[in-house]
Amino acid sequence: MLHLNVYDETSRLRSVLLGTAQSNGPIPKPEDAYDPKSLKHILAGTYPLEKDMIKEMEAFAAVFKKYNIEVFRPEIITDCNQIFSRDIAFVIEDKLIKANILPHREEEFQAILHVLEFIAIENILYPPEEVHIEGGDVMPWKDYIFIGTYTGHDYPDYITARTNWEGVEYVKKMFPHKKVKSFELRKCIVNPKENALHLDCCFQPIGHDKAIIHKNGFLIEEEYEWLVSHFGRENIFEITGDEMYQMFSNVFSISPDVIVSERNFTRLNNWLRDQGFTVEEIPYAEVSKQGGLLRCSTMPLVRD
Image (cartoon, rainbow, N blue to C red):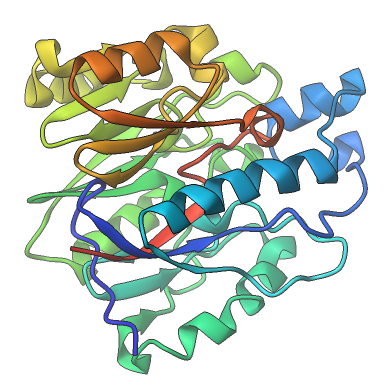
């Protein structure tokens, strides 16, 4: 049995679901793009090749192997993008919550049923239909659960808005002992530099008390300031709009002192080392063309 255990973003990882780029399918039509970054690369003819993304994901898997982490992978669905496992479900404490994702991505959840067999059935939660929530927006952090959301009246018009107010309320109801803090994110369908698809596209806690953040990812300045004050400005790495676009905040913590990062994130990686982190650098620039990076590709199941 898998005894789910995720109370924060950085405790030592023991088991994880890592997505797959195999049989990723043809280049999507522009009208089928999930996000503005994918759309940009579809239109520019620079959409990533399956063989390159497979290589990058195997480099990620090799880091997990190095640290003796149990790795699950989805079953392969022919011609289906299954890279971003954080979108389909996520774990808080000892509960796995199925995300109510974009309807045509439902089969991705079916591809991890072999993992769910190891989890006690009462620990798998299926939110009601009106609850929209994806794992990239959800971050357990000590006494808190941080959630990215978009509650504008035009929510249905944005394919980039993935977590609604009902999603926030659902987490509050399921985890009444936690302080649930939500953050309104900036959404834009056409300009990827003005769009925070998920909370982890503009913010992520690292180590014991530090964070990576991008101010313009937040719609409400006071909510951004709350995070800065909570972590302390001296503990924060502030990223630029271009660095948010490159996904600098979407690194992945194996433990409080080991972080997997993209090898081209020179400014961030140098800062992390200066702070005492071990940085495992891997190539992930091709995957990032689809609007997600390292945290998006993983679903932690068990941390210490």
